[in-house]
Amino acid sequence: MFDLKRWQQVHREIAERAIQPVRVVAVTKGQALESLEQALAAGVRAFGESYLQEALEKQRTLRSWDIEWHFIGRIQSNKTRLIAEHFDWVHALMDRSHGERLSRAREVTGRGPLSVCVQVNISGESSKGGVTCEALPELLAGLTDLPGIRVRGLMTLPELVGEDSGQKVRQRFSRLRELRDACIAGGYSMDTLSMGMSGDYREALAEGATLLRLGTLLFGSREVG
Ligand SMILES: *Cc1c(COP(=O)(O)O)cnc(C)c1O
View 1 (cartoon, protein in one colour):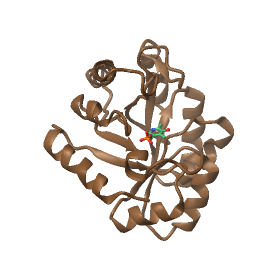
View 2 (cartoon, helix red, strand yellow):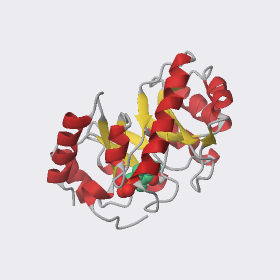
View 3 (cartoon, helix red, strand yellow):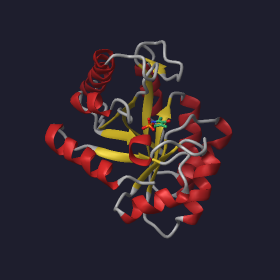
View 4 (cartoon, helix red, strand yellow):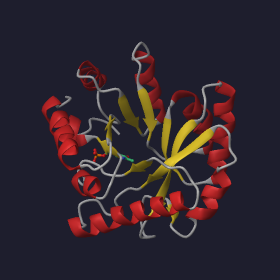
């Protein structure tokens, strides 16, 4: 079930607290189609999905809607073509070879570059991966000449869900913002800080997130996936 009140409340908080424009991507992995339809009826137009097959099925059913689709899951080499064809954004790029494959596949579609975020592993100990801060410059340099993708910014995931204090979470988000600023100072044009999920979006907002990825907060617990 899509929770319209929660959606509106999050947007009130954004209006009150954020110092820059912030978008909310409704993370619909594991949610039933009816929940997506409810969100669409309420005006939501950006959905995040982690599992390709599940996403493609939903996209087929909802193809009459003008939806911005975000692939937020792990990228696998053999899935890059379908991802490039069926999504507008990719949030967890951490590998140059995946960038090359996405770029090539995207060029064939003639749809203009795919927006991507590079996933950064802030403390270097994330179980969910991402490129380390030290390796980020080299990866970014290797992605700039790929015509089919456009690096829009950086993304991060919490390291240990639920076990970190708000203070630690904020430090991590703050570090990602500093990295983004350093990238901009280094000549990269980035407009996106993809950070903040249901459990930590307030900390992310306080540290300058421009894109929140909210799932269970908006839809309740996931049915599948
Ligand atoms: C599932 C997921 C989310 C949403 O998580 P919630 O805690 O349900 O808000 C956000 N980002 C990524 C990368 C995810 O995999």
